Every structure is written in C-alpha cells, then in structure tokens.
Amino acid sequence: MYSRSILCQLVAGVFCLFVSVCAIPVEPLKPRNSPKSLAPAVLHTRTPTETTRWEQWWAQLDEEHAPWLKIDLNSKDPEGDLKCEGYDKSSEVFADDLTQKILQRKSLVQNKGNNNFGIYTLLNKVSEFGSIPGDQIVVKLVEYEWKSASCEVFALRKYGDFQKEKGQAPTFVTSGFLKEPAFLKDGIIIMRKVPGMPLKDTEQWQNKAAGERQEILDKVFKNIQDFDYEFMEKTKFVHVDFTPDNFLVDENLNVHPIDFGAPSIYPVERVPTRRDFNTWFSERFDLLWRKYKLKTPKK
Image (cartoon, rainbow, N blue to C red; front, side, top):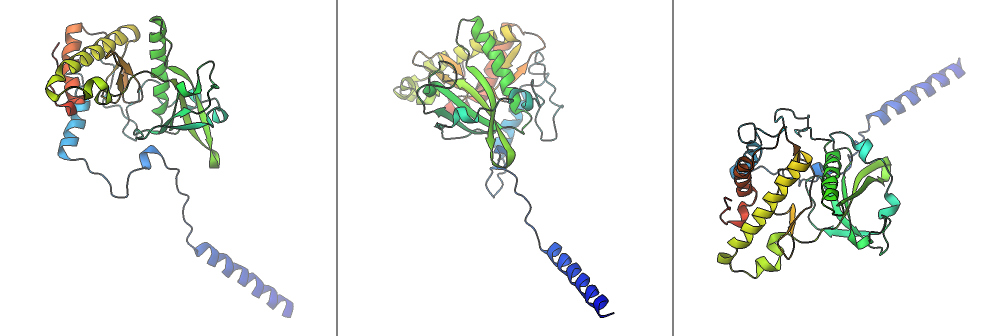
C-alpha cells in the first residue's frame, strides 16, 4: 500500500511538471527576413500622390491603353502578384548549388530592390563562371520562396537570345541557389556587368545646365523606345518598367537594360504598329521619368 501511495505521488508530480512546462510561453520561430518583411516597424502608408502613381502604373497596361499586351490584370496570386512568364519555377531555375562559387563577393549596389537580398560582384580576378573575370560578374540574390522570382530568369533567357541574334554576349550567365543556415535558400542570378550608369550620374548629364538637358533626354528616350520595340518584335515580350534605374546609359548615350524582374516583362498578343506603340511609350515614359521634370519627347 505504501509503495502504491509513493507511485501515485510520483505520477501526479510528473503530470504537474508536464502541465507547468506546457504552460510556459514559447516564442514562435521567427521567419527569415525577406524583401517583403524588411519594412520598418512603422508601416508606410502611401500618400495620395504615390497611390495615384501606382494606379497609373497598372492602368497603362490595361486593355484600353495596351490592347496588344498578353496580361490579365485580374489574375493575381494571394500576395497580389501577377503570374508572370516562369511563375513558381524556382525549383527549376535555381536548381544548382552555387554557394562555393560566390564566397568571395562584395556589395555592388547599396540600395536593394523590393524583391532581392542584394547585388554583388566577385573579388577573385579569375571567375568561377567560364572566362568572365570575377569583377565583371554581377551576383543578384533573390527570395527563393517568392513565386515571381523565377520570372526574371525566364525574361533574361529571352533577352539573351535577343542579344545572341545581334552578335552580342548575353547578359545572363546562369542561375542557382545559395545555401543559408537552417536549410534555407536564396536564389542566385549570375550576370555580366553592363556598361553605363543611371542617367543622372553620367558626366554628360551633370555637366549640362538644367536648361540644356532636354536634348540628352530626347536621345535616351529614343534609344529606349527603339530597343523596346525591337525587343518586342524579336521575342514577343516587352519591357514595361523602363525607369531611370532599370536602364543604364553609357558615354555615347546608348542604353542597357539591367533589371528584368517582375513586374517588368510581359508577353504580347501581337506586335502593335509603331505609331500605336510610340503613343503608349510616350505616356509611360512621362510617368516613369517624371522626376527628371523635363518635357517627354513625342517622337
């Protein structure tokens, strides 16, 4: 009887301990920081001007403004992203482990984009990527789990085919993943560096007085317009986000696209006439380059 009493007390003690432990609050696992979770503690609310501009951004892609675009603005995933070409293909396009090949890297761009973890170049003089020197390589880290991240690789492949047809070395080199702690991954996009810089940073722009810059902007406008129409003719895709930061300008005012991530590239149902395209392009250029506060050419 005595032994049985002791046993009962032991069982009761273990049960109480179990209940006490379960009652201790456990901090949930914190999700890995991602471009979508890097916002400051105080949430940013768009000003009326920002909201209007964002609405205009999408409105210019609707059937009324661009009936030749193959895009359904009502077809969005739960996160609000449109399902671009190559959507949800991360396991396919980021399949190779490139961790060891990009160990010696340094930051190339201080400001990260909305959907990437950083832009880097390599330190080593001899690159791990064919005969391309390390300092001529651009490493872009993107969110592997973001379903639209893979769209950029599909778009870069299209652009690469376009460049090869013109006898140019393709910007896109390869893609893979970077191993992170806790079995997490980043997507990696490897590209060649392209010449130029944003227009506002070029010597040509800075050496001109405000009243003398219109001619430069006219030339850049025409070069982006010509590029985008030819790119559309050859690939049946069009670049719709030709902002000042997404196209670099070299010393001869030639333009070089550097960002093909969603929501930048969309397929077309048909190639519009040059006149219709130019009308659409002028209106969009005015929206995307408004900060330059110059008159948009209507050529």
